[in-house]
Length: 363
Image (cartoon, rainbow, N blue to C red):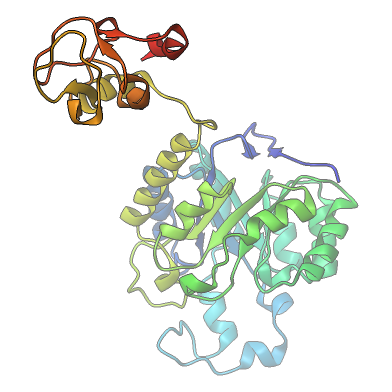
Protein backbone atom coordinates (compact mmCIF):
# COMPACT_ATOMS: atom_id res chain seq x y z
CA UNK A 1 0.00 0.00 0.00
CA UNK A 2 1.23 3.48 -0.83
CA UNK A 3 2.42 5.22 2.32
CA UNK A 4 1.18 8.81 2.64
CA UNK A 5 3.40 10.65 5.13
CA UNK A 6 1.86 14.11 5.06
CA UNK A 7 -0.84 16.38 3.68
CA UNK A 8 -0.12 19.94 2.53
CA UNK A 9 -2.87 22.56 2.63
CA UNK A 10 -3.33 25.32 0.07
CA UNK A 11 -2.01 27.76 2.67
CA UNK A 12 1.28 25.88 2.72
CA UNK A 13 0.78 24.26 6.13
CA UNK A 14 1.90 20.63 6.15
CA UNK A 15 0.32 18.08 8.47
CA UNK A 16 1.98 14.73 8.87
CA UNK A 17 4.85 12.65 10.11
CA UNK A 18 8.16 14.46 10.13
CA UNK A 19 6.47 17.80 10.80
CA UNK A 20 5.54 19.49 14.09
CA UNK A 21 2.41 18.00 15.61
CA UNK A 22 -0.60 19.98 14.35
CA UNK A 23 -2.41 20.93 17.56
CA UNK A 24 -6.08 21.79 17.21
CA UNK A 25 -8.31 23.61 19.68
CA UNK A 26 -11.77 22.12 19.04
CA UNK A 27 -13.97 25.08 19.91
CA UNK A 28 -16.99 23.27 18.50
CA UNK A 29 -20.07 24.80 20.09
CA UNK A 30 -18.40 25.67 23.39
CA UNK A 31 -18.79 29.31 22.39
CA UNK A 32 -22.49 28.79 23.28
CA UNK A 33 -23.62 30.70 20.19
CA UNK A 34 -21.86 33.86 21.39
CA UNK A 35 -19.72 35.49 18.68
CA UNK A 36 -17.64 37.52 21.14
CA UNK A 37 -16.97 34.44 23.25
CA UNK A 38 -15.90 32.56 20.11
CA UNK A 39 -13.50 35.36 19.20
CA UNK A 40 -12.05 35.36 22.71
CA UNK A 41 -11.58 31.58 22.50
CA UNK A 42 -9.60 32.06 19.29
CA UNK A 43 -7.39 34.58 21.10
CA UNK A 44 -6.78 32.17 23.97
CA UNK A 45 -6.11 29.26 21.63
CA UNK A 46 -3.58 31.30 19.68
CA UNK A 47 -1.87 32.37 22.91
CA UNK A 48 -1.64 28.70 23.92
CA UNK A 49 0.33 27.94 20.75
CA UNK A 50 -2.07 25.79 18.71
CA UNK A 51 -1.95 25.55 14.93
CA UNK A 52 -5.66 25.34 14.22
CA UNK A 53 -9.11 26.13 15.56
CA UNK A 54 -12.05 23.95 14.63
CA UNK A 55 -15.74 24.81 14.71
CA UNK A 56 -18.95 22.92 13.95
CA UNK A 57 -21.89 23.83 11.70
CA UNK A 58 -25.38 22.38 11.71
CA UNK A 59 -28.64 23.03 9.90
CA UNK A 60 -31.32 21.62 12.19
CA UNK A 61 -33.88 20.89 9.50
CA UNK A 62 -31.32 18.94 7.50
CA UNK A 63 -29.83 17.28 10.57
CA UNK A 64 -32.85 16.27 12.65
CA UNK A 65 -36.25 14.84 11.96
CA UNK A 66 -39.29 16.91 12.91
CA UNK A 67 -39.73 14.63 15.89
CA UNK A 68 -36.07 15.02 16.84
CA UNK A 69 -36.30 18.80 16.69
CA UNK A 70 -39.46 18.80 18.82
CA UNK A 71 -38.15 16.41 21.48
CA UNK A 72 -38.25 17.98 24.97
CA UNK A 73 -34.82 19.00 26.21
CA UNK A 74 -35.13 20.54 29.63
CA UNK A 75 -32.09 19.29 31.57
CA UNK A 76 -29.48 21.42 33.30
CA UNK A 77 -27.50 21.80 30.06
CA UNK A 78 -30.42 22.94 27.95
CA UNK A 79 -30.37 26.17 25.96
CA UNK A 80 -33.98 25.70 24.81
CA UNK A 81 -37.11 23.71 25.70
CA UNK A 82 -36.75 21.36 22.70
CA UNK A 83 -33.64 19.73 21.28
CA UNK A 84 -33.99 21.67 18.05
CA UNK A 85 -34.21 25.00 19.86
CA UNK A 86 -31.33 23.97 22.11
CA UNK A 87 -29.09 23.19 19.17
CA UNK A 88 -30.09 26.32 17.28
CA UNK A 89 -29.14 28.46 20.28
CA UNK A 90 -25.58 27.12 20.03
CA UNK A 91 -25.12 27.99 16.36
CA UNK A 92 -23.18 30.84 14.85
CA UNK A 93 -24.32 32.23 11.52
CA UNK A 94 -22.16 31.57 8.50
CA UNK A 95 -21.43 35.30 8.30
CA UNK A 96 -20.12 35.21 11.85
CA UNK A 97 -18.00 32.17 11.00
CA UNK A 98 -16.59 34.00 7.99
CA UNK A 99 -15.47 36.82 10.29
CA UNK A 100 -13.99 34.31 12.73
CA UNK A 101 -12.10 32.62 9.89
CA UNK A 102 -10.61 35.93 8.81
CA UNK A 103 -9.67 36.71 12.40
CA UNK A 104 -8.14 33.26 12.98
CA UNK A 105 -6.02 33.56 9.86
CA UNK A 106 -4.83 37.03 10.91
CA UNK A 107 -3.37 35.26 13.97
CA UNK A 108 -1.68 32.60 11.83
CA UNK A 109 -4.19 29.86 12.64
CA UNK A 110 -5.83 27.35 10.32
CA UNK A 111 -9.61 27.74 10.60
CA UNK A 112 -11.72 24.70 9.70
CA UNK A 113 -14.96 23.03 10.65
CA UNK A 114 -16.99 19.87 10.62
CA UNK A 115 -20.28 20.20 8.76
CA UNK A 116 -22.96 17.84 10.04
CA UNK A 117 -25.24 17.98 6.98
CA UNK A 118 -25.38 18.96 3.30
CA UNK A 119 -26.48 22.61 3.69
CA UNK A 120 -23.81 23.18 6.34
CA UNK A 121 -21.14 21.66 4.12
CA UNK A 122 -22.11 24.00 1.29
CA UNK A 123 -21.91 26.96 3.65
CA UNK A 124 -18.50 25.95 4.98
CA UNK A 125 -17.20 25.49 1.44
CA UNK A 126 -18.32 29.04 0.74
CA UNK A 127 -15.74 30.19 3.30
CA UNK A 128 -12.93 28.86 1.08
CA UNK A 129 -11.46 26.66 3.79
CA UNK A 130 -8.41 24.57 2.96
CA UNK A 131 -9.18 21.79 5.46
CA UNK A 132 -12.33 19.88 6.43
CA UNK A 133 -13.14 17.55 9.30
CA UNK A 134 -15.55 14.62 9.15
CA UNK A 135 -16.72 13.98 12.68
CA UNK A 136 -16.92 10.48 14.14
CA UNK A 137 -20.71 10.54 13.99
CA UNK A 138 -20.65 10.95 10.21
CA UNK A 139 -17.92 8.47 9.33
CA UNK A 140 -20.62 5.99 8.30
CA UNK A 141 -22.73 8.60 6.50
CA UNK A 142 -21.68 7.49 3.01
CA UNK A 143 -23.52 10.14 0.98
CA UNK A 144 -22.12 12.95 3.12
CA UNK A 145 -18.62 11.45 3.15
CA UNK A 146 -18.82 11.24 -0.64
CA UNK A 147 -19.70 14.94 -0.86
CA UNK A 148 -16.78 15.84 1.42
CA UNK A 149 -14.44 13.79 -0.75
CA UNK A 150 -15.69 15.28 -4.01
CA UNK A 151 -14.55 18.74 -2.89
CA UNK A 152 -10.92 17.64 -3.23
CA UNK A 153 -10.12 19.48 0.01
CA UNK A 154 -7.87 17.66 2.50
CA UNK A 155 -9.87 15.84 5.18
CA UNK A 156 -9.30 14.97 8.81
CA UNK A 157 -11.37 11.87 9.54
CA UNK A 158 -12.17 11.06 13.16
CA UNK A 159 -12.71 7.36 13.87
CA UNK A 160 -14.64 7.31 17.16
CA UNK A 161 -17.61 4.92 17.39
CA UNK A 162 -16.23 3.05 14.37
CA UNK A 163 -15.08 -0.49 13.68
CA UNK A 164 -12.27 -1.07 11.19
CA UNK A 165 -14.82 -2.17 8.63
CA UNK A 166 -16.58 1.20 8.95
CA UNK A 167 -13.28 3.01 8.40
CA UNK A 168 -12.57 0.81 5.37
CA UNK A 169 -15.81 1.97 3.74
CA UNK A 170 -15.31 5.66 4.51
CA UNK A 171 -11.74 5.68 3.23
CA UNK A 172 -12.70 3.84 0.07
CA UNK A 173 -15.17 6.66 -0.65
CA UNK A 174 -12.62 9.40 0.03
CA UNK A 175 -9.73 7.73 -1.78
CA UNK A 176 -11.82 7.41 -4.89
CA UNK A 177 -11.20 11.18 -5.11
CA UNK A 178 -7.91 11.82 -3.31
CA UNK A 179 -5.47 10.60 -0.65
CA UNK A 180 -5.21 13.84 1.33
CA UNK A 181 -6.56 12.28 4.52
CA UNK A 182 -5.40 12.31 8.13
CA UNK A 183 -6.99 9.73 10.44
CA UNK A 184 -7.65 10.54 14.07
CA UNK A 185 -7.83 7.75 16.61
CA UNK A 186 -10.69 8.57 18.97
CA UNK A 187 -12.94 7.16 21.66
CA UNK A 188 -16.17 9.17 21.48
CA UNK A 189 -16.98 8.90 25.19
CA UNK A 190 -17.35 12.28 26.94
CA UNK A 191 -15.26 12.24 29.07
CA UNK A 192 -13.30 9.12 28.16
CA UNK A 193 -11.76 7.04 30.98
CA UNK A 194 -7.99 6.74 30.56
CA UNK A 195 -8.11 2.95 30.46
CA UNK A 196 -10.38 3.04 27.39
CA UNK A 197 -8.30 5.42 25.26
CA UNK A 198 -6.20 2.79 23.48
CA UNK A 199 -3.28 4.86 22.17
CA UNK A 200 -1.56 1.81 20.58
CA UNK A 201 -4.47 1.66 18.11
CA UNK A 202 -2.79 4.51 16.23
CA UNK A 203 -0.01 2.23 15.01
CA UNK A 204 -2.56 -0.29 13.76
CA UNK A 205 -4.33 2.44 11.78
CA UNK A 206 -1.02 3.57 10.24
CA UNK A 207 -0.16 0.04 9.18
CA UNK A 208 -3.61 -0.76 7.81
CA UNK A 209 -4.21 2.41 5.82
CA UNK A 210 -0.79 3.93 5.08
CA UNK A 211 -2.02 7.39 6.14
CA UNK A 212 -0.89 9.99 8.68
CA UNK A 213 -2.54 9.30 12.03
CA UNK A 214 -3.31 11.61 14.93
CA UNK A 215 -5.34 11.62 18.10
CA UNK A 216 -8.61 13.27 19.10
CA UNK A 217 -8.82 13.13 22.88
CA UNK A 218 -11.81 13.34 25.17
CA UNK A 219 -10.01 12.55 28.42
CA UNK A 220 -10.10 15.01 31.29
CA UNK A 221 -6.33 15.24 31.69
CA UNK A 222 -3.52 15.91 29.23
CA UNK A 223 -1.19 12.94 29.77
CA UNK A 224 -2.63 10.71 27.04
CA UNK A 225 -2.59 13.54 24.50
CA UNK A 226 1.08 14.19 25.15
CA UNK A 227 1.87 10.47 25.10
CA UNK A 228 0.13 10.22 21.72
CA UNK A 229 2.83 12.45 20.25
CA UNK A 230 5.56 10.13 21.56
CA UNK A 231 3.70 7.33 19.75
CA UNK A 232 3.74 9.25 16.48
CA UNK A 233 0.53 11.32 16.45
CA UNK A 234 0.88 14.05 13.82
CA UNK A 235 -2.32 15.78 15.02
CA UNK A 236 -3.65 16.27 18.53
CA UNK A 237 -7.15 17.68 18.77
CA UNK A 238 -8.72 18.60 22.10
CA UNK A 239 -12.02 20.25 22.96
CA UNK A 240 -11.44 23.72 24.31
CA UNK A 241 -13.39 25.87 26.75
CA UNK A 242 -12.91 29.06 28.69
CA UNK A 243 -14.46 27.47 31.78
CA UNK A 244 -15.25 23.81 32.48
CA UNK A 245 -18.14 24.80 34.73
CA UNK A 246 -20.08 26.44 31.89
CA UNK A 247 -23.41 24.92 30.92
CA UNK A 248 -23.07 22.27 28.24
CA UNK A 249 -22.12 18.63 27.82
CA UNK A 250 -18.67 19.13 26.21
CA UNK A 251 -17.08 21.44 28.76
CA UNK A 252 -15.95 18.83 31.29
CA UNK A 253 -14.06 16.92 28.58
CA UNK A 254 -12.47 20.18 27.37
CA UNK A 255 -9.24 21.95 28.29
CA UNK A 256 -9.18 25.44 29.76
CA UNK A 257 -6.61 27.95 28.39
CA UNK A 258 -3.87 27.19 30.93
CA UNK A 259 -4.27 23.45 30.37
CA UNK A 260 -4.17 23.85 26.61
CA UNK A 261 -1.01 25.96 26.86
CA UNK A 262 0.59 23.41 29.17
CA UNK A 263 -0.28 20.58 26.77
CA UNK A 264 1.23 22.43 23.81
CA UNK A 265 4.41 23.09 25.78
CA UNK A 266 4.68 19.43 26.75
CA UNK A 267 4.06 18.29 23.17
CA UNK A 268 6.93 20.48 21.97
CA UNK A 269 9.14 19.03 24.73
CA UNK A 270 8.25 15.51 23.63
CA UNK A 271 9.02 16.33 20.00
CA UNK A 272 12.48 17.52 20.97
CA UNK A 273 12.98 14.40 23.08
CA UNK A 274 12.20 12.21 20.05
CA UNK A 275 14.84 13.71 17.74
CA UNK A 276 17.77 11.44 18.69
CA UNK A 277 17.08 8.01 17.22
CA UNK A 278 20.21 6.07 18.25
CA UNK A 279 22.14 5.70 21.51
CA UNK A 280 25.06 8.13 21.74
CA UNK A 281 27.22 9.80 24.35
CA UNK A 282 26.98 13.58 24.27
CA UNK A 283 29.86 15.92 25.13
CA UNK A 284 27.96 17.10 28.19
CA UNK A 285 27.78 13.49 29.39
CA UNK A 286 31.51 13.03 28.89
CA UNK A 287 32.17 15.96 31.20
CA UNK A 288 29.78 14.49 33.77
CA UNK A 289 31.43 11.08 33.47
CA UNK A 290 34.85 12.52 34.26
CA UNK A 291 33.44 13.99 37.49
CA UNK A 292 31.01 11.28 38.58
CA UNK A 293 32.44 8.01 37.31
CA UNK A 294 35.14 6.21 39.27
CA UNK A 295 38.63 5.04 38.50
CA UNK A 296 40.69 2.27 40.02
CA UNK A 297 42.83 3.39 42.96
CA UNK A 298 45.25 1.56 45.22
CA UNK A 299 43.73 0.59 48.56
CA UNK A 300 47.10 0.85 50.39
CA UNK A 301 50.74 1.76 49.95
CA UNK A 302 52.49 -0.84 47.80
CA UNK A 303 56.13 -1.43 46.77
CA UNK A 304 57.57 -1.72 43.29
CA UNK A 305 57.42 -5.27 41.96
CA UNK A 306 54.20 -6.09 43.82
CA UNK A 307 51.72 -8.28 41.92
CA UNK A 308 48.25 -6.74 42.25
CA UNK A 309 45.39 -8.68 43.87
CA UNK A 310 41.78 -7.76 44.70
CA UNK A 311 42.75 -6.54 48.18
CA UNK A 312 45.17 -4.02 46.68
CA UNK A 313 42.54 -2.16 44.69
CA UNK A 314 39.27 -0.25 45.05
CA UNK A 315 37.41 2.49 43.14
CA UNK A 316 36.95 6.21 43.81
CA UNK A 317 35.73 9.36 42.07
CA UNK A 318 36.66 11.42 40.10
CA UNK A 319 37.76 9.35 37.11
CA UNK A 320 41.37 10.49 36.72
CA UNK A 321 42.87 7.06 36.23
CA UNK A 322 42.11 3.70 34.67
CA UNK A 323 38.38 2.96 34.43
CA UNK A 324 36.96 0.06 36.48
CA UNK A 325 35.85 -1.44 33.19
CA UNK A 326 39.51 -2.66 32.99
CA UNK A 327 39.44 -4.17 36.49
CA UNK A 328 40.27 -7.69 35.32
CA UNK A 329 43.15 -6.43 33.17
CA UNK A 330 44.72 -4.65 36.12
CA UNK A 331 44.49 -7.67 38.43
CA UNK A 332 47.72 -9.68 38.24
CA UNK A 333 49.75 -6.80 36.83
CA UNK A 334 53.14 -5.97 38.40
CA UNK A 335 53.94 -2.51 39.73
CA UNK A 336 56.95 -0.89 38.11
CA UNK A 337 57.26 1.62 40.99
CA UNK A 338 55.98 2.09 44.50
CA UNK A 339 52.50 3.63 44.91
CA UNK A 340 50.50 5.37 47.64
CA UNK A 341 47.09 4.70 49.21
CA UNK A 342 44.25 6.07 46.98
CA UNK A 343 46.65 6.94 44.18
CA UNK A 344 44.82 6.45 40.87
CA UNK A 345 46.04 3.55 38.76
CA UNK A 346 47.70 4.66 35.54
CA UNK A 347 48.69 2.32 32.76
CA UNK A 348 52.30 3.46 32.86
CA UNK A 349 52.47 2.34 36.51
CA UNK A 350 51.87 -1.26 35.50
CA UNK A 351 53.84 -3.94 33.74
CA UNK A 352 51.40 -5.75 31.41
CA UNK A 353 51.75 -8.15 28.54
CA UNK A 354 51.28 -6.38 25.21
CA UNK A 355 48.07 -8.26 24.43
CA UNK A 356 46.58 -7.19 27.76
CA UNK A 357 47.04 -3.55 26.83
CA UNK A 358 44.98 -3.68 23.67
CA UNK A 359 42.32 -1.00 23.96
CA UNK A 360 43.72 0.39 27.21
CA UNK A 361 44.62 3.74 25.70
CA UNK A 362 40.94 4.47 25.05
CA UNK A 363 40.23 4.59 28.78
